Image (cartoon, rainbow over all chains, first blue to last red; front, top):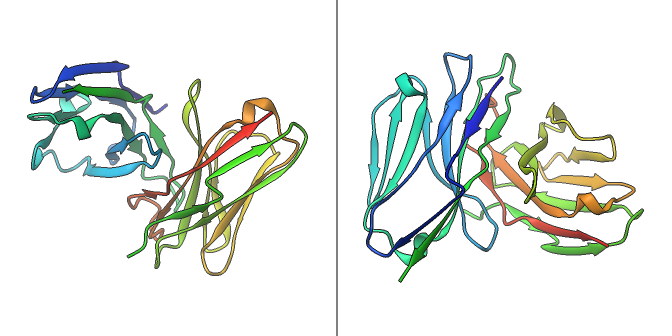
Length: 117
Length: 114
């Protein structure tokens, strides 16, 4: 069975601190897709990144970086020099390739990140 | 390019009533998925439509149904509402051809059942 675990329910840091959000996943598939989404108070899930299982390169986008490690089934997300606008709930998600055109996406329970001024 | 739009944004209903929510995908996207988000259960997949056909379905009772039109717009319907149906209903669209494309979400419809 597939599973996504975000063990950190809530994190609170002071602005400008670095913060890492953990994501551990379980799947029996050798091909799969991992995602991070941000959900601000408005409710809309904002797509941040997608990583394919066959691509273990780490990704950096501005203050955001992602560390994908298949050996530990983790896909962690780091925000460098956090800002108040980063306050949101962050979701990690896993999508299987499916055996037809049907595949499901499984979300973790989310990590609520609060950045204090 | 306009994003995913959902209407209405907020809705209040009473138990036993039915409700229809609408979702317009990003132009060119042919797949629409629906999710229910509650504090207790988190984000749960309801169903996915592609080319007017339900391609995948989550574990929800038959009271939850949906459909997709030829222009890829989708509606979901919940009949005989229960208090536990109070949730944020999110719609996501993707290109849809392979079933594994990135999904882009709308702002959601917040449903309150009294």
